[in-house]
Length: 158
Image (cartoon, rainbow, N blue to C red; front, side):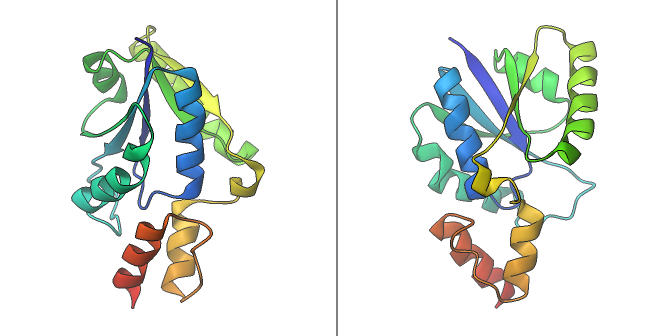
């Protein structure tokens, strides 16, 4: 079975994330959406909230599994018997950081490949950070995120 990991903080999941997951599913038999537990970040949504939002959205795509992980991504990939890590690239500005991470992951475990996928053009400007800022300022995020995420953002900010 060809299995890939799509890691991220997903704070919150956006339509761009879902687009990348659907693209990855065309290439792999199973995609594990792995929510990172990062003590250095202060997320808007708790780990459990992020997992639940992903269960309500991404888990509805066939052969997509939601999981949480701590520690090194390559170790998680090895434990899940995944041969690839999926990373979304929106713009050239994403590339340098993602390239460095991919090379380090390769150094840590050469058996795990990194696959870069680009979202649809309409999502290239989209990030969780921008979505949170728009929602915080009272803007309409309904075209940027799934309905359950828009409702969750509204509860956080209003």
